[in-house]
Amino acid sequence: MNLACAQLFFAAALWTLPCMTAAVAMSGATDLLHLNEVSMEAVVRNSSDSSDTSAPRARRKRFISSKDMTALLDYHNRVRSQVFPPAANMEYMVWDERLAKSAESWASQCIWDHGPPHVLRHTGQNLSIISGRYRSIVDLVRSWYDERHSFSFPNRCSGSVCTHYTQMVWATSNKIGCAVRKCSNIYVFGSTWKQATLLVCNYSIKGNWVGEAPYKTGKPCSACPSSYGGSCSKNQCDSRSKSRRNASGFRG
Image (cartoon, rainbow, N blue to C red; front, side, top):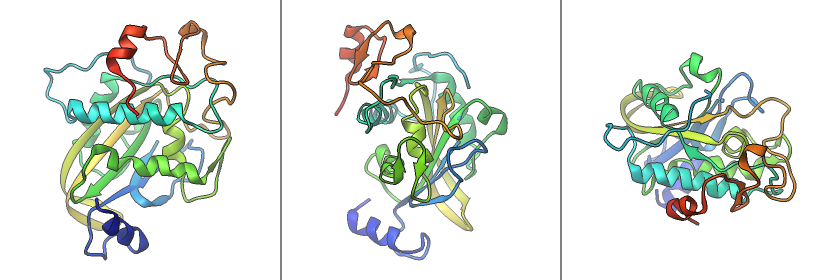
């Protein structure tokens, strides 16, 4: 999305401008940190499955490419490593195949809403939708990170919504699985979008609990769970071996 078009989009109503290359974001769940409201930067949603970590199976037809999967995971971990104030218990996030499958199942419905309800009881969820072209899958999630400007630690939000950001940096939400789906005639806030790209990201364990801070403040890795054995990498509790960390990389 070029900058001029994006600026026009955010300055006026979503569906009245000729520049319709736009992402949208919103957040939703009954136990979220703040009330669910529309973000003017993008239509995106947020809501918080205990699932076992498993490696992606390359042979299974998936709703997301390996490139996009890596980009989303790296972006989340970069954001998590750079929180301010610094986090003492931020856990390194890994891809979870079960979460990805549940995201695929919901994305295939092409519904602009959180769901399904039985999954959301134990799973966090961020949604984003875009009409028009985009350069990178990360373009669909930048507005989640931008909500940090409205967030004051530990749990105050001065903007319309902060829950996409807080779910991204919820310390114990150390698993993510996402899916991307091309949708036709999807109903988005009173308007039917003829062609759109829907992104669903599911998180475990669920974050955004009312009254709780997304993480503990302090020296990075000073309050990691004992299961990490004192291992720390890039300001995050990380029990992966050094060789695995080097192989997977930390892309800045």
